[in-house]
Length: 261
Ligand SMILES: NC(=O)c1ccc[n+]([C@@H]2O[C@H](COP(=O)([O-])OP(=O)(O)OC[C@H]3O[C@@H](n4cnc5c(N)ncnc54)[C@H](OP(=O)(O)O)[C@@H]3O)[C@@H](O)[C@H]2O)c1
Image (cartoon, rainbow, N blue to C red):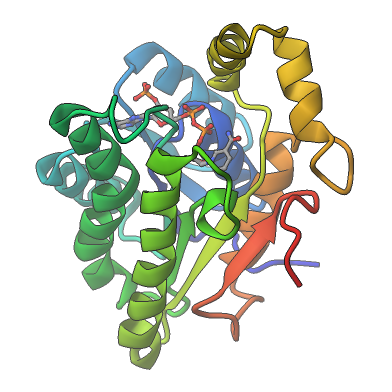
């Protein structure tokens, strides 16, 4: 099926590795031009080259998305370098583990500015561009802790649930402009950042990193982790022109991790 993504322009936050990078690659596979972003130049250059090799225009923009200025810079440069925007993917984020006692004002600032406020600011700056598109799309990347209780996941549950609320409000505000706003909710996904994270969790629990990973696999119905590309491919469908009547939804791509009906 032709998804209608050929020649569209997409900006993806936090896309030099992991899920954001997989989404950029899936979009580029469909002929969509992509603007990637990160703080680290080398990894970003490599990611841009990979997308360019698929025959699309790809640009890399160094920015710190934990600030409003960084978000504004990303969207303005993405728009001017690609020649306007049809699609915004809010993906940047990650897990900073912590408890009510251990989290400080500073670490909460990092978590909330990166995993939540960046979504708000990039949306704010992208909307004027998306309104000019014939098929404007916003896709937020949250996570299963936004849908299902995972005891201990304090620092991801708060931004993820807020992202779901934010997306619903934006879907209502932007519906009259024909812009759809959805959220993809990945389950445990085998990204680079899970290497050190699994080691840290293993140390805390006195088990091996493989045991940590197997324990998570065992909680899914498919018995395994997601490959980032599986999230990327689902995301490409959600933001495609073909997918024109879906808005305000949360799409779980979690291998059956969620157990509610
Ligand atoms: N992996 C999972 O199992 C999983 C599950 C559910 C949901 N999610 C969600 O999926 C999203 C991506 O997760 P991931 O595991 O793919 O993350 P990741 O591997 O850590 O990649 C994060 C990307 O964002 C960039 N980045 C981080 N902070 C940034 C900042 N302040 N400004 C600009 N760029 C920044 C990183 O590059 P630089 O470091 O160079 O800046 C990198 O390209 C997150 O929102 C996460 O909560 C992940």
